[in-house]
Length: 291
Image (cartoon, rainbow, N blue to C red; front, side):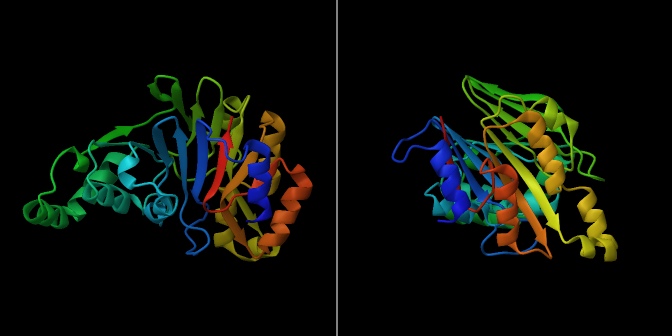
């Protein structure tokens, strides 16, 4: 187990104790292919419900690794429609159907999500027809309930409330972070963003902040226009520190780790020194029990 995972578990979890509220980083990566860091995806389990935020490359495989069937996911929330956050959707949707999903999948996402879903359905129409005709797969398990979100409360059920927060992701007009509230606890997921005031407004009294991070060698940014543009719509270490200083979460996990031209272990050490153990780099399959 890496040091960062140990720190998180020791601060927020009691070994052997089954918490009502559990967070698993399924994928901590970016569009860059990596066996260690799959595409962005975070699972929140609360009581008997499972809520998935983003569905990047390999999400269904990561779910399998922690013993969760994709048919157990009832609610999927997309932060925005960049490919690295949605390429695992078809796998999640169709694999759950094949494995006898009983109810429809609820999908929440920004403007354009309905177009994305409808085209995905068309792309796999031949496969769906074949399976329906030759294997007898039918029922609600294939159905999708798609909802376009706007800033504000988008989900309330019993003691769970989920709020969409508009964030600044450069030219991506419709990008959101999400706040997950129960009666006792609060979790905030930034999504992809540079410094965003909306996160400050909604970031009080957090048990856990999951925030993206981009660390790029300054010389590379100076000599590469593309990298300069990328850096402009992601969060630097200095920007994230400003967010953390303003909202004071109990713990922060850095996710969607874009590390270019820098040694990851050096970045890990810098984070440890800067935040004194209150913020760490996330890893795939890192699990946090919150209570």
